Image 1 (cartoon, helix red, strand yellow):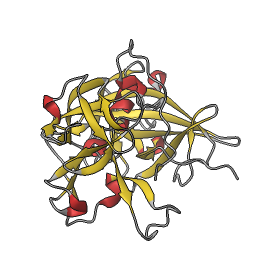
Image 2 (cartoon, one colour):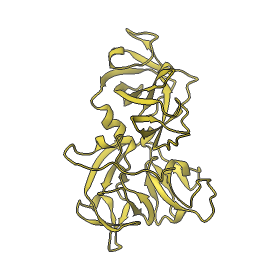
Image 3 (spheres, one colour):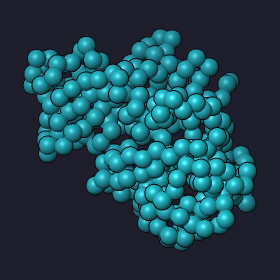
Image 4 (cartoon, helix red, strand yellow):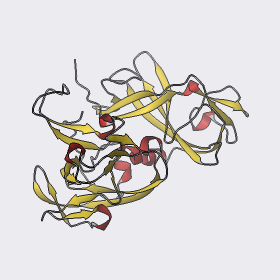
Length: 302
């Protein structure tokens, strides 16, 4: 059986869980750009529960990965459109519509970029296919939150917002490496972008460290206590949440920075080893169009 390691995993819902409660398409589920009408009001089913859609870069494009709750490993995954809806409190909520296609079945799911609650109605404001890859890249790309200190080649620790392209950071595997590009963005810290707080002292972190859920830390284990089959692994921050020393923070806005090298690297944030930006088809949309980079190797993912 071929191995399909998950590169990303997102909380999704079947589109049937989100239907028009009032409007032109009353009773219809949220769909593609040609299936919806602006002004329709949607409501999430009370019994709706998110299910993880795990994906990887297969030989023919994005596919369902091993361990996914949605679809079957090897099913094709297509990103269709980004819908913008007005939430009951007046905030904007975006949903990505994805199609999962297998040999015997095709299903649509939606990925909310902010929490969607069963109570209240969500009014569809706009739909845009062109922005969908960039919005997916926003939640798939690893970024460092402003204030996070990264280790320079000379050992000095500098807040990420003070770094510039061309400066050299210390990498675990290749020593000093030059930063090729730095991206900056400000986003709402909700849903898939709600950061994970690792408290000072946990995992030898020098100060409180905040990472996005998909950001991976380099872990060395003397005994294979997590069943990875090897001593060195990259583990997503979201998998470390324990409710006490590693917590999920929700709310507000955060400024973050993407750090890109010529290759995927392990660098040091607040004294612990974490990854730099991993270039995949899902994250490439976050990069400038004129920046030519090779796709990264993600073989050490867990």
